[in-house]
Image (cartoon, rainbow, N blue to C red; front, side, top):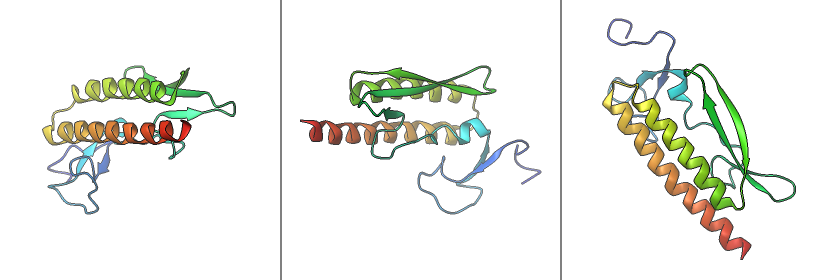
Length: 137
């Protein structure tokens, strides 16, 4: 590993290349920066779409992160009119971030994996939005 891979200051990831992978090995694992490894981690309330929160008054909001030179991220909450608007806003921001990160990568397996994760996240978020909207009406 030390001779064949760029691993310093990186995390070993087992499920970017192969979604849902539970085993470690050179064909399905890779070393990635901490930022890449954590791109899809934030999720406060699993009943809501990822990136969406609701306050005690029933107001939905999206928390979007921005960064400066990939060094750190800060969150900014944006009040939205509906769960759909909050989810759409957050997903658009997340997709731009994923694409931006992909432009810095060399390993095509990681790029394909991140884009697949993004597509699945969009589908799951839409499913959660539809469930919430069905329960509101």
